[in-house]
Length: 109
Image 1 (cartoon, rainbow, N blue to C red):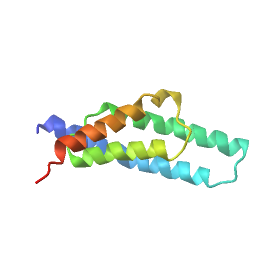
Image 2: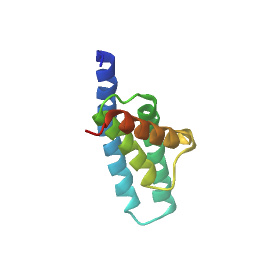
Image 3: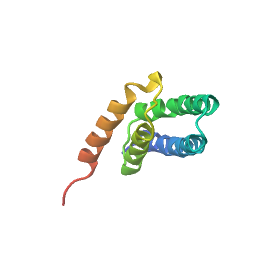
Image 4: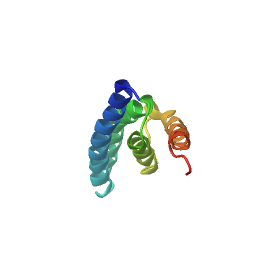
């Protein structure tokens, strides 16, 4: 594994922290009474999170920790029905990356 490999996983781990913060904000808004304002605020937060999702999907995971970040991004999709158009293709890409990565990295004894 090269330093570049380590740096992509390090970047994925940084993005995971940011995504967890974004998801926390989304959850706080989702727990409020549903109004036009809270709905708009929630969708705005999902839009903000979508940039992180796109970046996570674009980076290769070279370790199980990196794959865990890919799984967190998939959990973001699963946490609500609303996903901005900008991440339409990312969900399938992330799921394929996670499956291929687990198959590659987790070997039976």
